[in-house]
Image 1 (cartoon, one colour):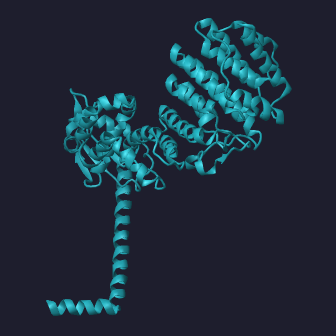
Image 2 (image 1 turned 180 degrees about the horizontal axis):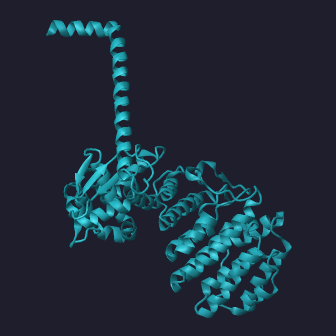
Image 3 (image 1 turned 90 degrees about the vertical axis):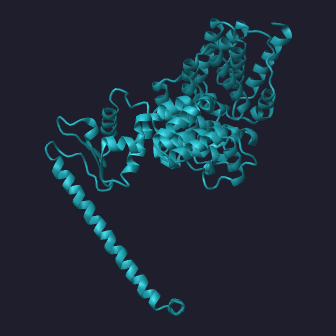
Length: 477
């Protein structure tokens, strides 16, 4: 390392010591110096990082230390280099008040990009995610101190875009480290990491965008919720995943984004699996942008239309036809993860027409034999097992001893009339009670409709226009 390069780092450190975080000098001197920073090193120098680890007061020069660490991660070429850089990352997580450093998101972005490079080139996504979730967890805790304890998001109130304040230094702010943490969690594919990230990152309410620029703000927000949705899918929370993906479309923009295209594709797949119908974009999303999205995902829309209008055999065949497209979009795994949910929607649809059917008839109507869960040696038994595994009280299977699976009877009950699982020996009484409640409610609905029509008829009889039209029709007849 040349003397000129060494002096560059020394000057940076001395500047940081003269401009502690939170002071006016920090914003006017150190932050502008680091915004367009380029590492003075051409290769990894353990001495530079070692000196920083030993000599730099982390709290006083934390932003500089973060930049030195990012440079080290970018220049690391051996396992020893990476290990040394991760020691620095750990110290940043545990010893630095990171909330005070959010005023320079450029350095946080460089650190996130450097960690992403290490994870990609070493396939060390688990290690990178563990480091990031510890760092982001501490950031959230430190930032939340300005508004109280972190508030866990509940349902659709989670991280609403319209409630986020721009350029605010109060509460939990979105940073580049948040987004990279979620991305690395998805790539790590470890359930225990998903659970930790869900608790410490996804479920912590965001209050502001912080100091992200207007250009990077929208991208960071969209990427954050795109990856947050994938974390939710990893934990089988499909409802929360859909809520997260809907937020990808929440910010106003002049043009549609490829991030939105990716989110909408996944939203369609999960919407079919979870709800049995095509997911819709938020009503406030611009129609011109929606048309752009539709033009980039014709295959996915065709799949949704096939699912809605045809049998399961047609839907499964369409999925197989789209396998190459789904693999290219990295959505084939998502389809495989949600494929087992598809048959239940076709089975429930039958209940809107039939009160009871035999398994053989249900097999023909739904096309269950085309689904991967239908065993070739015993497809009827597989369907019986699937219905039992649904644990849906509105769909029950009655199979007497010695009766073949294809002759078992499936009964469909009104979902609102179903009750808790009966005690042993009381199943028949339970079904009779359910049917009685269903019939009583239907009779009541008919009576109410009859009364409503009678009132409407009396009202029309008193209307001059109605009487006049009736006379005209009589004369014409």
